[in-house]
Amino acid sequence: MNAQRTPLTSEHENARAQIVNFSGWAMPVHYTSILEEARHVRRAVGLFDLCHMGRVRLSGDGYADLVDRLVTCKTRNMKTGVIRYAMLTREDGTTIDDVLVYREADSIFLCINAGNRNRDLAWLRTHAAGTNVVVDDLSDRLAMIALQGPKSVDVARKLCGGDPGAVKYYGFTMTTFCGMPDIMVSRTGYTGEDGYEFYFPAERAVDVWRKLLEVGAPEGLRPIGLGARDTLRLEAGMPLFGHEIDDTTTPLEADLMWAVDLEKDFVGAGAIRDLAARGTPRRLVGFKLAGKRVPRFGYVVFDGELAIGEVRSGTYSPTLETNIGTAYVGTASAGKKHLSLDLRGSREAIEIVPLPFYRRAR
Amino acid sequence: MIPNDRQYLETHEWAKKEGDLVVLGITDFAVKHLTDLVYIKLPSVGDHLKKGERFGEIESVKAVSDLMSPVEGEVVEVNSELVDALDRVANDPYNAGWMVKVRGGAISGMLDAAAYQKVTEADGH
Image: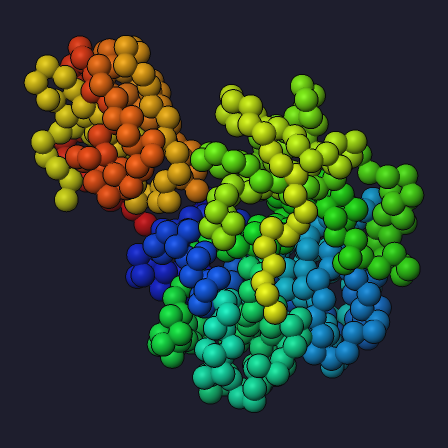
């Protein structure tokens, strides 16, 4: 398969990044080393090309009702400039995608996963059919670049109008950015650090990328690949579609009920209420693993001699300096402190620990 | 630079004749591709390696890779210090990062440095 290229893929190639196919996109997995890049984001600041992600705006008569019916989080009380994490769920409560919901004045903007772009759009459009709601796919027109790391605010201040330091966590503002007026600047992230996302016309992607690296040099700004991003998000206990959540998981099992409003009606609410009453057969847990070998997707988890689950993500954590992972395990075993896993033929003890593995001091 | 004193596999192992022994290791390209090495599993002295079969594994944060033997023969020496010094593989894969020495193996059907260089260019980014 020929991977799609973002407006920045050639920048990554020129920087001698190692490029991989991620969800159909040619993306940098690392520029130097995954661990080095992950450590750098925890102590300074990194730049991320997120153009592969999907960006959709819903507007027109009835858009607010439609979004409220499709996403799991409460949206009615969101003020303009507020962002919430949510999932799109099916009638049976399983997950189509996880999304960020941006409340705009007369519209709602969604940031969705690269690999789910087309089916999310199809889902939104199916539900919008026959209404006056406009589903506008901005993915190709808008570039998306993120800063992550404790020094993000120092870099953002150099290129943003107003004070980006005044934007609240999980909030956004419209301001000038790199000389462009009315650019959406949000403050979320997928690493557990402070950070910003910039959404701006795609044709400016290359010069904005270069400008950021130039003005951010004193703070140590450097590009970061998807490898470090995955390590950082796992340390921060953030789910990744295809791993902690997928077509078969419900928010209950994934421990994401904080992002679900069961008091409202949304597609999947009934099934999730039923499951909440009955209990789910499995739960997502976090674990630590001593030893040098890294736990990986699909490794079988045991309670005694009984296979009771499987690993969903695993990495060496440069912040904790140990191997960490997530796994789905049978509910009966989810409360245990010690389980084991089959690490390519050898049985290794794992310690079940609460998520997240890492939380920044604020 | 890819040393031209040895032969290569497309799977990025090298084999070098040293007296009546053959020394095996992996290439700098493989190391750069793996990055962040965390673990290596090597055979024991006395193990019999078969051509085209796995003789160990090397793991990085990113992935686990099999180490493929380009020769048949008996393992007579293992660089077991690598287990706690993977930086030797990372920093000097053609010398300090050697992995095993094999007796009996004839090198055949492998690539020379120029041909291997072409493989890495095709695999390039």
